[in-house]
Image (cartoon, rainbow, N blue to C red; front, side):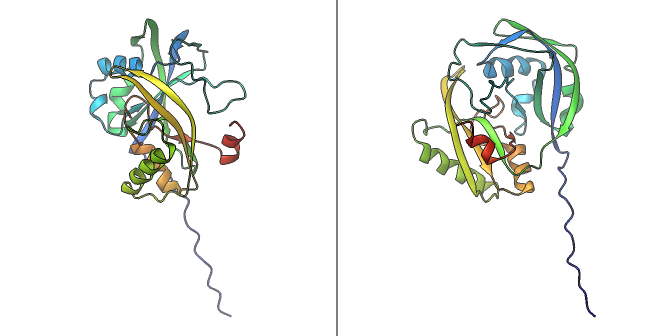
Length: 228
């Protein structure tokens, strides 16, 4: 008898060249539209941040009850209350880990609200094959979803990624020093674990350092659609 067993492929493990660093924070409240002010404050403590193409600051996110990844459009003046479990995450190259850890014990002020950094933890990026970015800015596509998706497709191709499924979510407006920019939430599904890591390491669109185009894992398409 001849019996040739098919070799099992080893499970893909996320590399450690780019990671998320999660900080405990002491901060009672913060503006919902805080992305620009937060990154600018961090640039004072980590001057290299803006020059690292794979570095980004995650928005501090408090989900609305029963509303998953879609948030309110009222970004201008809304203030969100933070709990003790709230974390502030930075996506950085591993080579910047020690410098990033130095934030522990330091303070910043974000639009008049004080925030103190506590202890940090490191996390590998996710190998999940459905990922979502809550804010993606593609210039010139503010009112044209088709043009937005076409540009996203071009950018993913440049990264060597074959996109199979994409879904736009709700539009938002973010305040920046350059004025108001419009963003869309974006889900990308049915990619490979390797492609998922590439997108998380590099992001898409403009204002990556300020938290736009930053991808995080999503449990699945059904969960997203259920909240539309």
